[in-house]
Image (cartoon, rainbow, N blue to C red; front, side, top):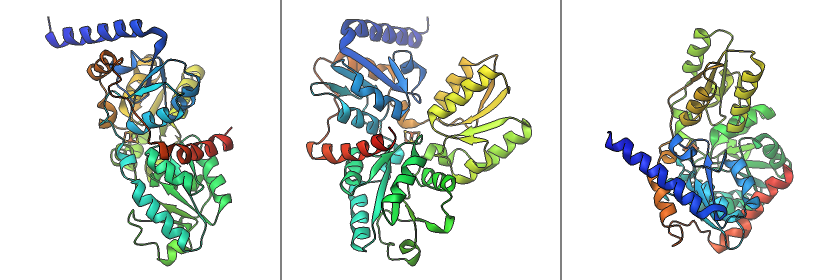
Amino acid sequence: MDHKVCGQDATHARIAELKKKFGADLVILGHHYQADEIIRHVDIVGDSLELARRIPDIEARNIVFCGVYFMAESAALLARPGQRVFLPDHGADCAMARMARAADVERVLERLSASGRKVLPLAYVNSSLAVKAVVGRFGGAVCTSSNAKTMLEWAMEQGDAVLFLPDRNLGRNTARVLGIAPEKQVLISASGNDLDRDEVRGAKLLLWPGCCPIHESLMKPDMVDAFHSHFPGCRVLVHPECTPDVVQRCDGAGSTAYLIKEVEKAAAEGREHTLCIGTEFHLVHRLMERYAGKLNIIPLAQASCADMEKVDAQKLLSTLEYLEEGAGTVTVEESLKAPARDAIVRMLERCR
Ligand code: SF4
């Protein structure tokens, strides 16, 4: 017998046993980008917005969050008193979130305020809680890839300009939908040393220089063109974290939830046979398996997120083995709670 397979089987069996033992005291949440070895044990699967929305309804004392750090931080913020949130690997961070440090964001916003213009910050949910707290203190809000258009419109109404962070691609793709002219959009540096430029002073949208390396570097415009020419009439759908030149060549762009819904619709209506999906590979692979025989789903790229992959079955098992001791809980600094919550609540109120 293959010892590795035997070991994995034992790991999965023990996870199932511990889940049974904790019963209603435990809920496991998993992001769509998690590997199958995690998803098979998850009670609630979703994208970051869907999972955050579920937190207030969870009554279990222990919430194990299988995703990356900023998601677990938001869960810890939204959890009830006495509830504990665990992340199986605290090193599972998001490369995009790491591109915006709270101290840099604060310095840039202070300099922009000092110039006399009202620049409202809008933070994509893929940012640390410390960044969300800075954004909240400056009157700004959080957005997700599902509501970026609504929130950018809202932010534009509040002041002279908007600072969109950390994802320059989501910022530009959303600005295009809203018809904000390219010359009114300016990419700034994280140091804030270039804020005195005339083009910055005249801009409506300032973009932080962050991106998702998975969606930006591994999905290219020529790949979309190649797919269209090999499969005439078929659709290419991507996540708006892809670069604008990729998004503009595609037949649709939207959040993870949008991509899943489009696949479900295509399968239900039987209106097309081949779909190309440009997002993280674990999700695309599951869709390929789920709709095998009904739809020919092809990934735009074999792009997997190394941070999401840090959470594996072995680490989930260790978390459950030491759950009672409370090892691996995610905590939120007291001073960040109120301003970060303000930024999130502004989004929830606008997108009610
Ligand atoms: S896929 Fe990109 S945005 Fe999502 S967690 Fe990984 S690095 Fe962050």
